[in-house]
Length: 288
Image 1 (tube, rainbow, N blue to C red):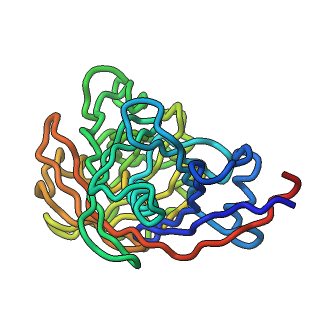
Image 2 (image 1 turned 90 degrees about the horizontal axis):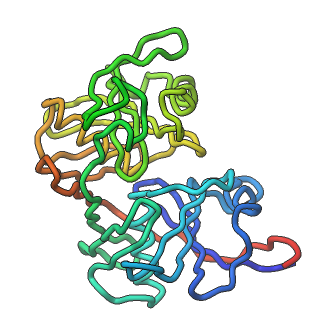
């Protein structure tokens, strides 16, 4: 048997297993992602984060895996935990670093806290509004976007949805009561809808007031999670473009709250939220 070292972390309840590819020689991850992610027989995670050496313009590189072994472009809650891990493990003492992801370089910045729970702000870059780049065929599937308040036929019903990419694709629909809405029924159907060729993360959102939204997220390849940071950014952008919220707001998720700010246009979206370490350990993964 081979022992694999890991750290368990969470950002607003969105939980991760972190593997350190700078410290340890790691096995191929796709075959063991399901074991690590299993909450009964493994460690349990929403996504697996892997620390790697930078290959281009960044200081470090973050790989993100779902339990099914598929890779993900970006995870905003994950990058906050990733940055906290870099500092906790002694890989950096900088107040900000450049992290390479499949969606480009993202910059997390230390915003305070301690060894238990930190607050970290992330420059998420500008939102992607062009349908072809999200990607989605909603609307006419062309042009610069945005894709706002368009009909989507799903499970025999017509939902009104918007679509934004924050490095990964999101579909947003407003609901009257986010707690009562059947997320488990509509989430998988929208995730795999043919309007989204790369599948999609789905946000169900309730407007409380101009500075406050409530959100539930069904993440592609994972299912419903307690929080989704990139989803919160997409929700904020769509809501700002629709004119129903202010340029700074808080988004209440099942696992905590995130603060999102965007000044519009080509400006970056900024997200601030918590990152916490839970425990570290080793798991046996078979012959290695």
